Length: 113
Ligand code: AMP
Ligand code: ZN
Image: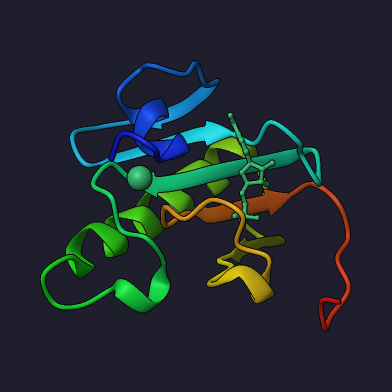
């Protein structure tokens, strides 16, 4: 999608600090990190939000979680990390292209605000 920020990052039109890439998934460091490790993991195909996951696209979502596990181990945060998805504007989704935040390297509280 031409007007989607993360599609433009996938296309290479906007630079990103890549952490992982393969044919279907891209991961890059968040531009405004909330922890020492803050990586965004996205499907390369445009899926707007978690509510749009269905049997036609769930394989790439599963792969996003495989990549999250890989990166968590690579960054040494596999024992204490958070994988977050915000779905919808009131849930603080600001980019309408499905993404999972892999966050770690500090202590967390629960529940989130
Ligand atoms: P969300 O609020 O869940 O939609 O998360 C969107 C995330 O994208 C935020 O954490 C932003 O800091 C991050 N972000 C926005 N633009 C960029 C960019 N150009 N490169 C990397 N991360 C970005
Ligand atoms: Zn997109």
